[in-house]
Length: 413
Ligand SMILES: Cc1cc2nc3c(=O)[nH]c(=O)nc-3n(C[C@H](O)[C@H](O)[C@H](O)COP(=O)(O)OP(=O)(O)OC[C@H]3O[C@@H](n4cnc5c(N)ncnc54)[C@H](O)[C@@H]3O)c2cc1C
Image (tube, rainbow, N blue to C red; front, top):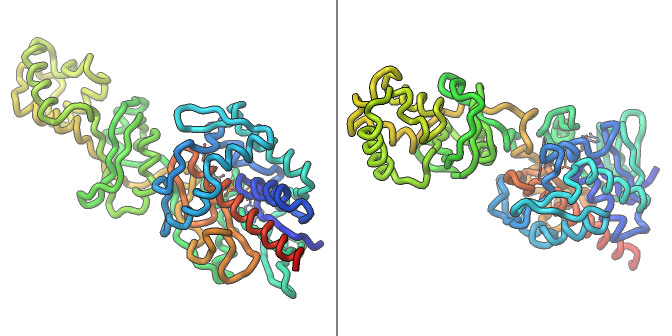
């Protein structure tokens, strides 16, 4: 069976590429091979089932990897507007929450449906339960082996994703291992956009509490990344948008430490002065109720204990030094990062295929003409907020445009 274009992986990037190739070059035969019984399983799980499909503020600074500049061209040429018009054309208008874009249905499953309908309507052949386990080159064509089937193809797009979300979403990293064996350079994979583990003693007492905080990730005292938002204390460590956002950098850092500023709007001096006033104002209370009314009660009690005070002492025993100590803890509540909750809970994978081996304008391999790689399998990962799906769309649209252009050239030769 010879195909003009064969796509390995029916996730976000693969489905988008299949539709885009057919739109630009309808005469090309396109076949998509998906290992799972259904396409788009991970896409259907995105954004808690709502699919944060992209972001109005797509910017290279929100992307990470050994060479984030690799995605500059794709994001510039096929950025937010390109994604918006691509999805409008297949029946998915966008709705917004701030800068975050969602399908107007707020249903991730409907994005999968519309991509699948568009692919089928355009004549893409979708083969599910078809897991590719080898790629060979035979007489100028690619030979793709899936169990006891084989497919010949002029062009191959590798869109097999990586490890985020775990095997239930089709992510086992087998394709990366296969490519590595075939000689492709890879960058070590790590979970990103994932909850962080810390020593359990403190966080366990705060389990379930949510606080707005400025989160700073540090290594050896050096600030690596700072984010603001709602932090959730869990029995294993910390979660919440700002924690997820710094998690990729934490996984790559030496002895990372996460520090929470629980009152970023107040300077240390202003907060110390406020606590001094509070001490005289509430001198009749017990220390266990000192922060009651000012912050979450349980959090306040943990801060008092962490500063070395007993909960059963009277507030009147606090002095200016105690105010300083408590203020310092509120401004810098630090936790050693001991790990993360793993690929199964991560939304994206750092690392993957080394981008130096691919052309950033076409996503084509520099060594194997007509072999393309797109989406998460490349060593590019984005921040939380729609940036990863945008990378899937941008890289897919780039590869599709390149294949259509090449075929035009081939037709006119
Ligand atoms: C729980 C969760 C929530 C997320 N939420 C968001 C969000 O709201 N916004 C956002 O921007 N990003 C989100 N992401 C990230 C986003 O889903 C990924 O970045 C995106 O799906 C990557 O697209 P992809 O096509 O490269 O890979 P995938 O979507 O993983 O698709 C790869 C496909 O290839 C198939 N495959 C793998 N190996 C083979 C093989 N050997 N043969 C055949 N098929 C194979 C897999 O089964 C899979 O269907 C989320 C991720 C997770 C896990």
